[in-house]
Image (tube, rainbow over all chains, first blue to last red; front, side, top):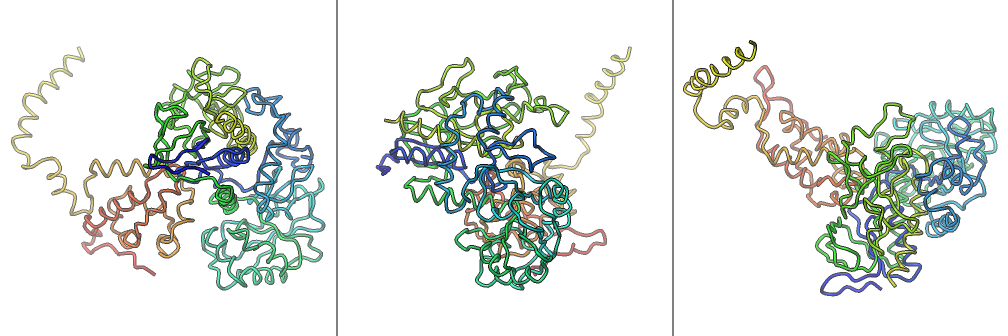
Length: 435
Length: 155
C-alpha cells in the first residue's frame, strides 16, 4: 500500500488528473503492482461527457449515415490513424487498443454494457445519432440497430431540457436506413419530482423508492402500439445501484434507455463517479488538490494541497482546456510542469505556433482543422513528453489523455478512446519505470 | 501644420485648463469623489479585490458540476432557479443588482465543497464569500421614483 510518512505520501506512480485518462492510468499501474496516488483538482471533462465511450467515428458513415457504422472500434481507429498523421492513434500505434478497451470495460463492468463486435448507434438529446464503442447499461436498449419495433421517444412533461418531438423527427431520418420508426410521446412525471428541476436533481428524485415505478406506469399508458423500446431524457438516476432504468422498464413493460447527454450531463457524472469508486476499491490514494510541480522532476517531492507526494514515475493526465492541462493566457502553456505546448497547423507542426496569440490559431472555416483545438503536448512512442527540440523531458514522466495534442479531442469523436488507450499505456509504462 | 495645432492644444491643457480644474474641483481623493457622486445611485466603486474576483469568476464555463454537489443549490429556491454559476457570475458584473442576491448569497453555508468541483478552477467559495460581503456593503438601489427597488423574497 501507499506509505504515509511524516514527510508525506510515498508511492511508485503519481497520476496528476482524475478523469478517464488519469483513472485508467492509475488502475493500469495498480494492476501492474505499483503503489499509486492520484492528485486531481476537480472532476474534469469526463464528467461533462455524453456518458458513452466513442473510440473513433466511422468516417465514411458520418454524419448522415450513422447506421452504417458497423466497423469495430479497431478498424475505425485505423482509418482515423491513416488520415491524421498527428493523431495519437497514428503516433502510438493501435496494437494495444483492444487490450486497453477490454481493461476499461472490465474495470467499469458495473456501469458499462458488454461490448459488441460492432459499435452501438445511440441517439443524442438533439435527435442525431452517433456510434459508440462502449455505452452505459442505461443506454444499451436505445441502440438504434437493436430496437425491435417502433421506438417511443418520451418527453417528460415540464422538463424543457429534452424535446421529444425534435428527437423523434431527427431519428425519423434513419427509419429508411434500418432504424426504428420513432414516435414522440409525453409522460407526466411522478408528483414527487419537480419537472423544472435541473437534470441531476431529476435524476436523484427518480432514485427514490416508487418514483421510477410511477414513471414507468405513466409511460406504459402513453406507449404507441407494439413499441419495441422507449427512449427517455438522460436523467435516469445518478447512482447505477438505484437501478432506475431497470425499474422504469419493469413498470413500463418494455426496454427503456436514455439518450446521450449534453452538459450538465448526468451520464457523465455517473461515469466520473464510477471511476472514482473503482479507484478507491483498487486501493489508489486520491488527493483532491492541484499539483504545481514547477521545475521538480519525478523522484522529487511535489506539493499537492499541502501534502508532499514523492513518486518515482509521474503520469500527467490533466486534460486540455476544460480540464486545465493546457491553459491560454495570451499564449498556450502547460501549467503543471511548464512543458512546451505544440500547436500543429496541418502538417506544419511545431512549438512556435503555440507562442502565437490563441486567437490566431483558429481558422474561419469551421470544418477545417483548427490548430488551437488540437494543441497539446508532443510525446514520443512511449508517451514521454518531448521538449522544444524533440528530446524526451524525463525518462519517468509520461502523459495520457487530452493533454497530448495532435487531435481535436472535443469534436473528433476519439476523446475517451484516446484517454483509455494512452491511460492504459502510460499507466503500465509508469509502473514499469518505477521499478 | 496639424501637429503644431495639436501641440498647442496639449500645452493649453497642461498649462491652463488642468491647473484651473484642479484648483476648483471638489476636495478628496478620486475614490471619495466617486463615492459622493454615485454610491447614492447604487453604483459602488470597483476595487482591486473586486476586479480579481471578477476575473477569477470569468473562468466559469457554466457546466453546472458545482451545482450537482451543492446542498445550497438544492435547498435554496433562488439559487436553484438561477444556477450557482449565475448567482456569482451575473451578480459580480452588476453592482446595482448585487443587493437583490443578498438572501441567496447569505444561504451559502461556506462549506467550500464546490471548490473541488470546478473543472476550470474558479475559487467558487471565495467568490461567493466576496459577493456576500459586497452585497452587505452596497446600499439598496433606488428606483427612479425614489422608492427602494423591490427585493427578491425567498419563496
